[in-house]
Length: 614
Image (cartoon, rainbow, N blue to C red):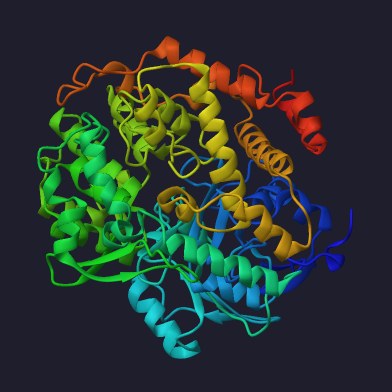
């Protein structure tokens, strides 16, 4: 294996920042890591396994916060302005990450870094300023307590409007367990509480400016391929409608196929869906924005009920709209805007507020909350961010809140491994339920959006083909796009050919990757992340891969699929198929043979001691 200096596509350098000592150093990481993990999620997972002390407190100084780009990031390629933010999650206790589209991604590449790793904790609030190979820690006392929009404005005034900025709001400072990392007034990453990890380290922001060239083996070929791909996107059949509605087109589809989360995932249809769908968006739309290098921007900006701007997409609208019984898009937009300013995840926010509403209806908490109560929800968003009253309990996430409330509340806590389910009801979608159950960060759709395929094929089947489809999608979406790092939407939404991506990699890195090799990389990343979960939990059970109890116990009562619910025994058979395909045992732990085949032999001694290996 060649060293990184003999390969293009990576700088081979990681900026390692110790916030306790306020020292920053350059780490030239092994070239084999670049070849075998690509970057982004893969690189972050490898670093966490190697350098995070097992059992470390996610909100303690020993947790590592990683911001990693990949070999495609920043190049003139479709939607390449992405990075992955990762750490041990304070919400789940396992591996946590999220990707974010931001100018910071491009600037980090131009500055000559493949990642930044933070350890320790600053004595007082600080932010990191990176300009090429210079890294400085600045005081942030004047920024602490300020919302993300205002703080980013102040940082741009100090360092220039073209700098890349990642930062947290009061939610991250208060260590809300689903606080996120924000950028550009609406870009958000790190649902499993990565903003809380930043807050625990007294790190308010990261500001990046780069002036160099992004490394590539064949710049001319890269530009040629990128230009053709951009053209293919513009000529795609769905392009015009996408530009009108973006992901918001999903509201109407989800309503039609009975998967729109409604009243804390009790139903799959919402009687007021037209008040929050993509056509309503078009009426309120005032602007559109996207990430760097994107020609199909998904950020649809509307004027909200307070006459301010709010950037919307399907997930936050479904979770803060139908899931709360709120059918006014302009009011949903207000809740979304407040969450973005305060720096908390809109998906988990919609889930914990719906959970609280159901708990109130059942008399399990003293607070009285009605479905669709906009004013109550508006106040609750702020109470969660600042940990006041009921908000302090909900800031712990649905799983912890349910364990504290007791009763049967765990049955309607809509989460897997502690992460709240994103916006697709699965009473009648076992394949998507499996995707949620086995997502490497907890219940999230980004790794395997199997539901579109599932409703077209046979949504009530529990056959092996569904497990195969979930693994196939996880390999492409979660293993590869999250490690390239580039956005998956050009492929998913307008049909950009996947055949472009090995060509992009060849032009960037100079290395030829076959699809078999890329599949192996993806499987390696998933097995390593699963091994990380097993290491951090010490015990492991297939119950960790089980969807919310409500989908099994409480059938739908409305819409064309009324009476539908998941079957527990059949789901477990589906899970068995999944484990078999992945080469994991019936607990969901990778076998020794699988680990050796994937080049993860270094994992074996740890897992052997903790749980034993088959």
